[in-house]
Image (cartoon, rainbow, N blue to C red; front, side, top):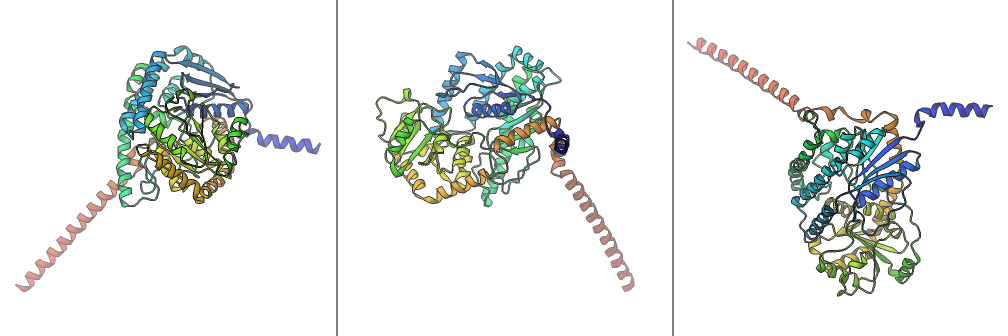
Length: 524
């Protein structure tokens, strides 16, 4: 009887923290590649926690080349873009890939890509049958991929409260009000560390103002979409939609990133795809066993790059791998390997590989990567040093952090030569300090109070139970910029100081004038 009473008391106090029923949750994925892998993982975590989950997925050929999609335990609503447009988009992407490997990754390519997302968004928002069906479902919350501005427009159209998940570092900090002191917080794409000298701080300041110009250009690419799909008088602004998120979650970790201030409505949950390794296939195990003490290297340039368009780059990489003592397991589309190019004898290519499981293998020595966040989180989780060939987006900034943490280094793509690649690999694998640093970062990441998957689910449930994230949002998000920076106060105090100084000066002049007049009268 006493045990039953204790049980009832425990349930009474736990009731506010328990969801009476599984919530209805919508997840949005409008970009393929690693973005899909993350959204799929989060959808599975929410489903496994007892929630009713549906993913709204823009599906297309080439979304994940070589990847066999796992059976989904949650519901999926998919649609595909027109095949003619998809072929055009693939050709544009391949051209961009060539530019990236030649070191051309400027603003024009980024804005062109955002233009493509805008065009896709226009097609997506015309799917009125899908949007009407989802609106009728009355979802409690949505979790969206915040990389694509179209996700915010879709949420506005559906009228569902949402959590924004950003698949990388704090690249859009300025847009959502995160404090970013320019003296030690590097601006996105500045390629600076938190240890900036004078000229570094000057560069960071200029980059900060330039980032606002770039953001305005990005938002401008979606203006026509907004005009077409929202009536006059209720047309949203992307800047305002970013602030409507109940919570912002970033796919990063301070084992990797530089320490910086955050606000309560911002959480970081990096490493959702990093897990204890499972045994690899017997085919791979047989190949790895031939490596002896040298071990093996994992090579993958991202989920969206299954092969290389520039034969010159491919030849340099293949020749570079031939010069190292390790075996090399390379994710490369077998059908795209040139017949005239002989594969290095120590290299095995595969259409797809289980990167996480290979990085957890005891004989792995190095990851050669493009520097994407998911790959780096998995490398940190397993304590594996890194050599990167960063191509675009956040990859250069990611590798600046990896280099600063002494876990690896990177080679700019335009400098990629066989001898440089081989020398860099030997340097990182022979110098044990890189492995020690990687293992230290592994301890930092793994010793967090809660694993990332559980942390993510609990935050989503907290927002649902609390009826939103309003209690986490500081009032600064509603203030105009001049109030946030106290410019009105500074102006007021400056005017007071000037008026006071002027008054004191006038009084002194009056007193001095009277004294001088009195002195002259006495002399006369």
